[in-house]
Length: 362
Image (cartoon, rainbow, N blue to C red; front, side):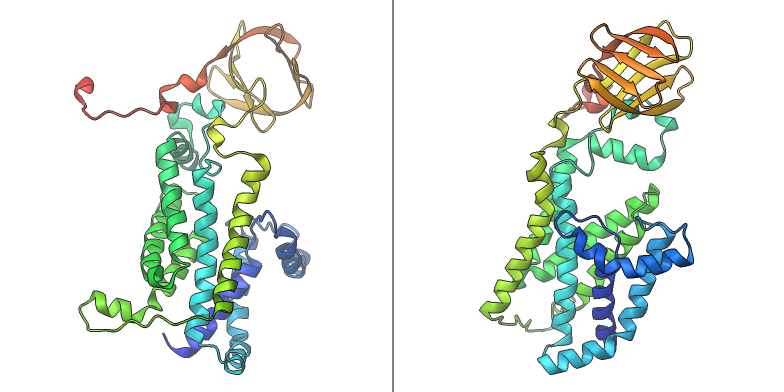
């Protein structure tokens, strides 16, 4: 890669991570403070802008990171010359830092089942054909503990390989494979993380291209890969950064003590309920995010924000629904019906099954 392209890419990666809208656990205030002048200025131009994943506002911020990266390349060039830094090593370090964070973050979230979580009862009782592609994919992956955790272990393992110079090239190849699969899923199932996943795939490819000697050896050319010797100070900074990233990723898990979301306690009356005597409503669902959801006989859904007035009484904020759990009754718009709980976690979708032989299916 030519020198000016390396300098441009260093600037782009720095501005990209600074301007990317993302919810952090420990460092959110720092990044939001940096982003505030830019988001505030853009808001004055268009009040409707939203800075969330794959929104128009986010695309503008990422476009600005590309522009600023190119404009700041002379400054980066002077800084590298003054500090006697090798631009290739600076580029590798910045890309490795970004890849390490996102691989560890999403890998850890998969291991703890906080990314691909168990389908909520209303989703489990939605006819499959009525699910959007993204929810269908999310629900199927979330229903398999072993598959989700395995994906997470692969991503965390790839992140850890980035910490050691002798395994960084292997890590770059694994990162390309991981993010290629993520991009394919996001586009195939219309999941709104396309911009982030494409950026990370591009960063993985550029990072891998920095290992020119390793690539030559793959294609049969005689090479002698050079492993730079880093000072103790450099190694200390690397592992301090790794510690901060790991702390950022696992802090929500430790603070909530949620190491396996499948088994994490829900609301006391969370679940699915059959409604008796109603000509319109067949199911009532209690969602973990404090929603009461009604399912009609035509499989139409309507959700209501709810308030927990007591252990035995849930009420929708608009007063439409009142649940009396002590007597197993629900009042919907003035009409009272009996309800019984359905053991939705016993549905086939939510069972961990394994068949070595398929004889029983034939």
